[in-house]
Length: 217
Image (cartoon, rainbow, N blue to C red; front, side, top):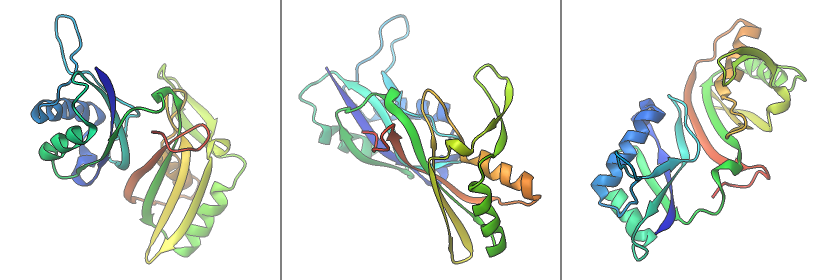
């Protein structure tokens, strides 16, 4: 038995599939593919799969990761990829299959790309806003308590550029078991501060990183 890590893209209409439903879909995908997956023990055995980092509803992703165990050591990574590709729906693209190199607990950051309508004056205001020493937002903790926090020090890096009539924001934020920061919080904070609206045209998670800002693999 060996561990395999599946890297895939979740694009298009799949952005409307929640993390819980994606979990169910992946279980069905594994069964349809006929993979020699290890099943959990107990009264209700089920294929053992584990997502590295949940994805918020409404987000596409260019870099998703799910782990599973293969009972047949002779079943190659290429066979796993081919089997999944043969049954995957539109919007789910298998990138590669490897052996895990890092533990999911090592995930520390994630990169995002948000595209929205924003004129030149708002763009400059947004840049100044992101460069503030203090950006206060309301965030619910794991116990359901809403706290006011300063997220400015948590923004690892960002860029804003105008592409035709749209603004593209690339930003790296905390992600993983210790802390998750949704980029929508930043948009909402700016909208509240400037009494304006910046409805995103597209929201994409582009990469998952470890504490050294290296790609999680």
